[in-house]
Image 1 (cartoon, rainbow, N blue to C red):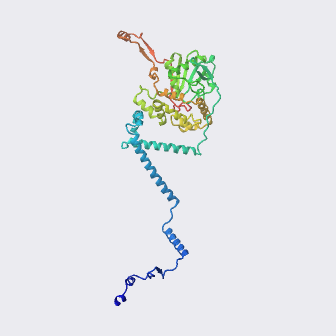
Image 2 (spheres, rainbow, N blue to C red; image 1 turned 120 degrees about the vertical axis):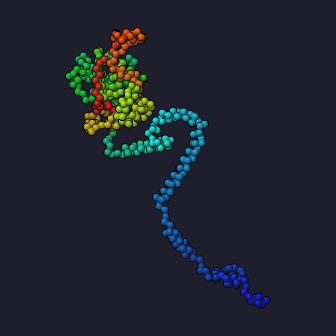
Length: 457
């Protein structure tokens, strides 16, 4: 027993296996004999030192990095939201049995078929379904950029506002109750050797007359010039359903009202020439002759050859081609363009309204104060009523079916052959034939005068 008791106990053996920890076990409670006393200030200093070491190893994020991470997260959320909305639309709206497809599927398909020709302008390897949304998005961005740049362009000239002038025109009342405004210069009616009726062109008025002409020159040659506002332009009342036939008879009734008893000449510039053509077609018995300068023809005239069509469309600016297409297919959209240009209440630059590009000499002329004053006053009178309807009507008249062809005005022999016997008789006799078309002189000057007569229609 003594040997057993004198042997090392299990506590002593365990202590011999480990290092001295400074803990003395007495059987009752553990005591720390070698540990230093706890110092709170020293512990705080050590924690601060550890924190500073961490900051030195990991530099803090800058504001730019924080913003970048935020934008990345925001874009990811927006992308996921867009995908979710797309899935919802595909599962609910775009299905064949949805209400939207049933109501709008037919009209959208018809519009898509009409605009399908635009796919020819895309590269062959591009899918129209993906290409056109991208083109439309880029187009919107380009318009926004142009508007922003235009608003901060300090080099652009000051834009003048369109002024409203007091009424100053002479007016007559037509048989249907409408009033037609006109302007008369030159010699009086009792001394006139030549009477000229001058319908104005698109975006013009009775004030245009013959731009730059001197009254002494008219008096020298005994010319009486009567220019008038088309229905809805200037101070003339609008026509509820005007066409080229009604335009010709408006001219005839104006001539009778101002005392033109004999035949008169018609003078037309650019777009105003269509009313001169109408007078030659519908009231030829009162027309002594016609003078047209840079006359307009119907760009969709079916009797024209492919070479003639190619020549007309090849020389036109893209803006004019677009206006022609809209006037023929989607005339209601013209109101949007007109409201943003000459009906915006501000004068635009002349070169933006021209149907052809200006040469350097023409640009110098347009920059003069004389031309600018004349141009602004004429435009202000043209848009006096502030209504897009007469301008849309005029644009439609230019590209729609006129009811006649210019070939009908050409002098030709017309024979009446209602049967085989009159036809055989006409082979040996000219008694059943007569000359058709306009028999008077027609003078054509195919040049573009630099006044408001060659502007975009």
